[in-house]
Amino acid sequence: MEKSPHLHRFHITTFGCQMNLADTSTLVSILTDSGFRRVPDEKDADLIILNTCSVRDKAEQRVIGRLGELRRYKQARPEVRLAVVGCMAQRLGEKLVELAPHVDIVLGTDRLFELPQVLARSNGSAAIMTAFGQQEIDDFSPVKETDYSAFVTISRGCDNYCSYCIVPFVRGRERAHSSDHVVDSVKRLVDEGVVEITLLGQNVNSYRHGDTDFPRLLRRVAQETEIPRVRFMTSHPKDLSDELIEVMAAEPRVMPHVHLPLQSGCDRILEKMGRGYTLAHYRSIVDKLRQYLSYVSLTTDLIVGFPSETQEEFQQTLDAVEEIQFDAAFMFRYSVRPGTAAARLSDDVDEAEKIRRLSLLIKLQQKIGSQRNQREVGRIRRSLVEGVSRRSDEYQRARTEGNKTVLFEAANLSPGSVAPIRISSADAFTLHGELVESS
Ligand code: SF4
Image 1 (cartoon, rainbow, N blue to C red):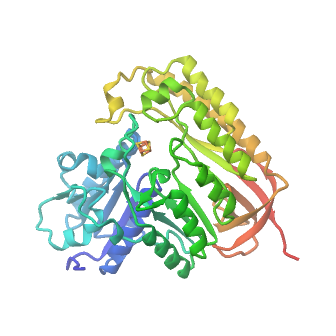
Image 2: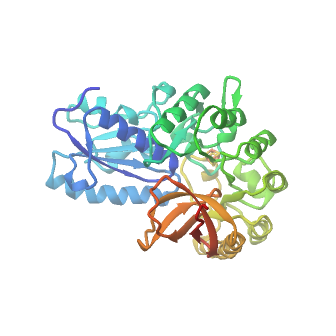
Image 3: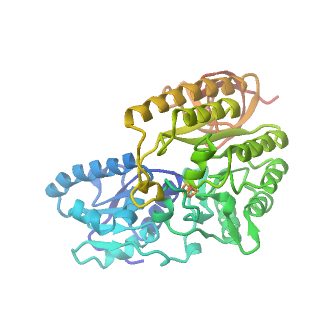
């Protein structure tokens, strides 16, 4: 690929979810192959990239704040190029340049990998590219996140149009990578030393390419590659099939963790959200997972204060959380995303009430998360070592099969090794344990 003669060093900041992290890794690899060098400090960069998120207003406000700071920075260093890519670039397009005229390049979710070519032909005026369908999806291969782990995107976009969600608008219709591409990518990553991959899609359960659906793809990855640990996310309750549970039960290298967003415990709200399932259906999946898997860790997403949610309906969410017993949850206040179906509804639960509901929910989930973690005490979990603890270098940090963080006394294990850790104590967020010495 061509390289702009003036630009050499880039800095990239990623906002949002794992899909964005995966896109950032691919973009970094494309830029590096084109002769650019990534630098850890923005001040050393002559190309600054923000890979953005639109899923909540707060995420966009953070980017806008960052752009405000970069305006002053660019006044001092006008030669620096500023590229905004990803979901917010897709959503706002030209409006982004009206809002922040110091932005040089705006590339949407289907165009960000064209950044080197855009830089090479840039003529000084802002470049804005947001059209979908310009890329052959299999042209881009996943790259390592760390020396030992990688995200492998199996599909891009989403066809579900949940009423509150901006994703289908900013990431487009669902497009699947071929199963051969996924399997070959995993084989290559294994050759590069990766021991854990996460198969990624907005809704992995609706994956289909030719005759291959998601359970078949997962089985192929587990059986045709040497990858020691496989995860996947995000699952959708309306599409999670019995076949998937069978594959999870049969393939020990598929990690026993399911992230299954419930969003609300009230059927009327679920219907207004356009989620396509009831609480009873959700419950039946959880029952099957817990029946067929000897151990499974279950995490979820929940939204409080969706338009017209009453106190009783919020109580149904609390009741569902109490009943289902999630290991962990991401919990949010509803925030209007312009252009979505829910944006036409009156956002009638006031902010103070949303905050009250959210804090009640968080308190409940912390109690449950702590209890769930207590159940781990005494068990031995084969855990993937990630490095030293962020809090103290006397401890190393690892991730259990159930995707829980465990800290153990530093034993000089290299990141990427898998070690048996006996869990000795736990709080709501973290397990503590000790390395089980092999005899
Ligand atoms: S499944 Fe629903 S919530 Fe998830 S990305 Fe698609 S539209 Fe958004």
